[in-house]
Length: 104
Image 1 (spheres, helix red, strand yellow):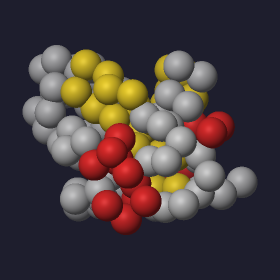
Image 2 (spheres, one colour):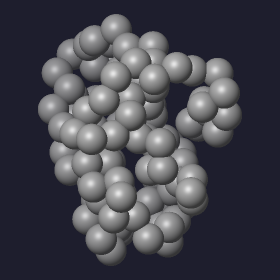
Image 3 (spheres, one colour):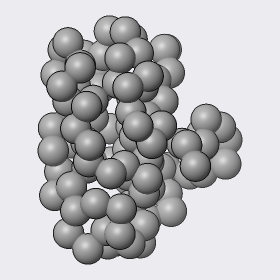
């Protein structure tokens, strides 16, 4: 199941991480929420394929270790979300559709 494109209407901001919003619920380590508001990554479906890191021309993502998460024990974290140029490469290449780009 892909990222919920309407998560901003159905979820609340549970906190911040590396300067970006984290949308809840968050119940670590099993439920990690959605990281980012412009470059949104659903950590609960991210399988750490890594294609987003490979295709991003401006290096928006870094690996984040998430031990104990059932989908994968690392995630593609949008740590440089403000650098996004909206090319959509990460969104279109993600095999599980865990990423959604929102242009401000």
